[in-house]
Amino acid sequence: MKSLIVIGSLILFVVPSGCGISVADDSTLLLAPDFQLGERGALPGPVSHSGLRFERREYPGQGAIEWQVRLRAPASGESPVYGDLKSADFVVQFPSGNPVMLHWSKGSHSEVGDFQPRVEPLNQGKSFALESFGGRSSDGVMPYFNLAGEGGGLVVAVGWSGDWRSVFEAVGGGRVRVTAGLKRSHFKLRAGEEVRLPSVLVMGYRGDWIDGQNHFRRLVLRAFTPKTHAPLDLMPVAASVHGMVRFNDTTEQKLIQLAADIAALRLPLDSYWLDAGWNGGGFPRGQGNPDADLARFPRGLGPVGAAVRQAGMRFLAWFEPERAMRGTWLQREHADWLLAPSDTPDGLRYMEKDGFRLLDFGNAHARAWALDTISKNIRDAGIAIYRQDFNLYPAYFWHTGEGPDDIGLREVRHITGLYDFLDELVRRHPGLILDNCASGGRRLDFEMMRRCVALWRSDSCWGDRAFPRNVQAMTHGLSLWLPLHGLGANKTDEVALRSGMGACASFAINFLNPEAVGALRQHIDRCLKVRRLFTADFYPLAAWSDDPKQWLAFQFHDPTSGDGLVQAFCGSAAPRCRRSVRLRGLDPRRQYTFVDWDCETAPTKRIGAELCETGIEVGSRGGDQAVVLQYSLVP
Image (cartoon, rainbow, N blue to C red):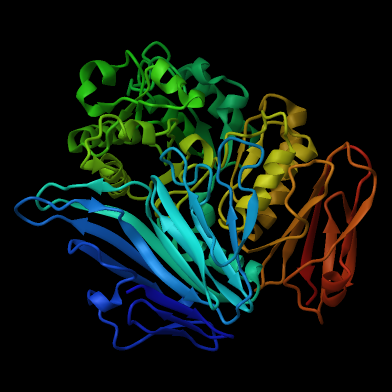
């Protein structure tokens, strides 16, 4: 029997196969008193195997429920074949027969359109399937979905850092069937073995679809953000060394001197960002050589870390433990820990030609080696922010040589091992911040977000021909789901700096150029005063567009303080025109003071009703435009 979730007018009833949940007038989920975890009737879908175990987590203040799914083989004897494993299979009942609108977003794929919002009407008789690409959870499609009906809806999220698949099907009478789980599964387990399967999160809301998005942003901030620090303390305002030193040209001497030079500037920077290339062989050919290049770092990273701490900054350092290249130490010494790719499509054939290998995190010995090796670097260098990259498509490695009863098993063991690896790393190093890169934003599922922050959301960045519209559009798209992200800049003109605003920033500039440093200082001083707003409610004020001739505008609004920020962008090829954007979330009876960052000496006051109904004008003066309007509630 499928679970049933009923969304009525202003009331939500969630019935996971017998467990009643309702939303009171304050939108708080109330659990039915007769619910007993572990009863078959309380599971979120059909129990196809006796070894499936659903562990329920409740977020009553947020109207959300999560279930973590585990699968255990019998303690003795032969395992059954576990096939077509689903972590969720339920029906949502909406109060109207009108088509439910499924809001979803593209994921990261190093493209201009990364995180583009999409919407699909769900019509009876036609199912709509979404899935990840290549083995990383947010590659191609984000694993977050908003089923929006009249007066409310349901957000569904898949927590799995590998390949997943979800299907949405209107089945008549206002009902939508939702299934989610592994993309591929037909395997046996060892006797007594337990593995993780995809987790599922559901969150009910009232209002329109954007109300649901903001409710979900608050849930992510409060429940699916690492607890080691306050949210904004997790997000660095960093000096990147690579505005002055290329990846493979870093040396101990250069990095120590640069740390001292930056400290002397007294810029409001809290972190020092060392990215790829410091290990033996450089980037990318040296992946699989775990130690620092002896010619460039004869004493390892320790002296650099000491210089960074003396400069009053946190040391952020890059690693890529899951990849090894041909001829590296890992390939020579532990080839038995490595998986090779096969059957890659033409666009990914380079992984086979160039000798890419995947370190199998499902192998306990390989995982223990990675933990010990990286932990030593963290201790020796005093690393405060550990940056984990992952620049391959693991599905083509997991598939290699699979037996008929092993389909999906390598992936399951690898992802289970990945979570164990990250959790153990934080246990060994209390206070360590984990940054999840994965070729830029390709592992943004909620299981990773509860462990890591995302400091690099896409490899389509300031070097792309579409800059700055690509990064402006990414702020628009990704902010619908996640509150903690940002970019920074590698130039100090206003358009570049304002396009990269967010909860975090990396500045890869020439720190020996006084003019650039002055512009950066002014920008950071402004941004630090409003940075908290990027974690508040988000409203798109113009349709998402990757066309720089179109205005792109959005708003961040703190409903508690009444403060907010409006950003609007337009390219130089656009006609000179003015556009009115209508704000959201304001009190229609109250007055607000607006300051245009380009004319801070002339603040204006406007009534909330006028701002929401008529709007506020932004205009083009020619050239690329990056308008920032900061507002506050008049006491």
